[in-house]
Image (cartoon, rainbow, N blue to C red; front, top):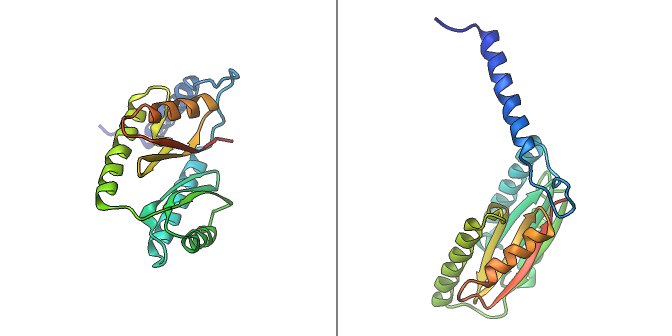
Length: 192
C-alpha cells in the first residue's frame, strides 16, 4: 500500500527539521564561547557556484595557468592563492575572477615564483602537499576541507577560510611538523 503524498511530505519535512535541529545543537564554540559565524545552505551553494565559475574562467583563459591557483569562496569573497610566473599573469587572473558573476570581492594571496622549478621539485612538492593534507585531515581540531594547500620548493602555503584563530594556529603547527616543510605561509582568513 502506498502512503499518501501528504504523509510522505510531512515525514520528509519532520526528518529535515530534526536533522537541522540536531546539527544546530552540535555546533562547536570558538575561543569566546560563541558558535562560529555560519552561512545558510543557499549561501553555501552560491559560493560553490562562484568557486566553480572562477575555476572554469581561469581554466578557459589561455594566458593563465589555472592549475597553479587555489580558489575558495565565502559569502561572495573569493580567495585566490597559489603561485604564478609573473605579474601579468597575476593581474589577468584578478581581472578574470572579478568578471565572474557573484564575485563581491577578491582576496589575492597569490605569490610570484622566484625561479623555475624542476620536475623533481614538482614531484617533491606534490608529495609534501599530500602529507600536509593528510595530516590536516587526521587532526580533529582542523577542518582540512576548508584549507587549501599548495607547495613550492618545500614552502607550504595554507589558504582558505577557518572558524577561528586557534584553528588557524593549529593548521600552521600541523603543517610545520611535516618532514620536508621548510616554511609555512599563512594566507588563511577567519570566517566573517
